[in-house]
Image 1 (spheres, rainbow, N blue to C red):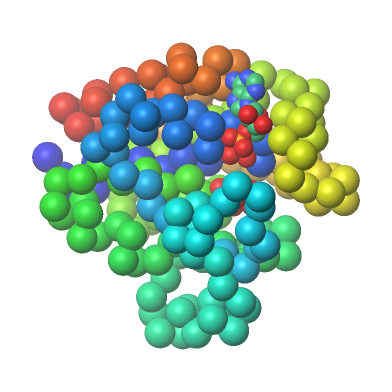
Image 2: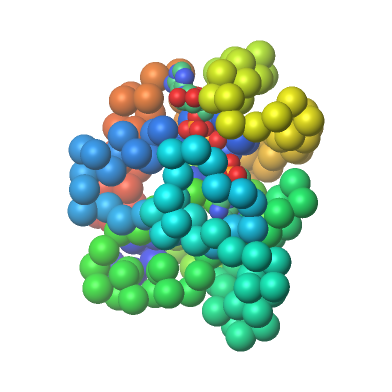
Length: 188
Ligand code: ADP
Ligand code: 5GP
């Protein structure tokens, strides 16, 4: 099997439930590892350095880019986000399945670098439900929620570029669908 098939890229609008679904997938299948991204956005309550993200300043992030340490990076709603190279290559070579939870531009860049990777788009059941989840999460102020909802409309138009699109109306079912996709891809 091509080792790139061990790379699962999950995208979807903010609030669709990507982190929740991937957490559920990893609880059921702890052998699947998460790629921890770098970001310049502030840490949310309950998050931890090196667990949810590597939080850094603009200067630190830009230094990583200039040293060629980022596989891909974007500016999303005014903050940098990127996948460090160290999160991916060694693991897939060692036979470990790695999940990247990243936005649409980063996902397209990963697909260019790893054409055999599997890209899955997670959709909310509706825009109203997306807004309710985003506000219900309570982690962003209203201005940021508005920015993310505007960005969500653009992101939803990118879903056809993905290998699969699934609807997150139920967390466990959606996590099972992700797992089934992985198993099918890795046994092709
Ligand atoms: P994302 O990672 O896509 O930004 P989160 O995983 O943080 O989204 O989920 C956003 C909010 O929606 C969270 O409060 C989460 O608990 C909730 N949520 C996620 N999936 C569902 C679901 N299937 N039904 C109801 N609420 C959900
Ligand atoms: P959040 O601030 O909600 O954690 O993430 C905002 C958006 O950035 C989400 O769509 C998330 O998937 C995306 N993201 C997180 N890490 C990365 C990354 O390393 N690269 C890219 N391209 N997007 C990322």
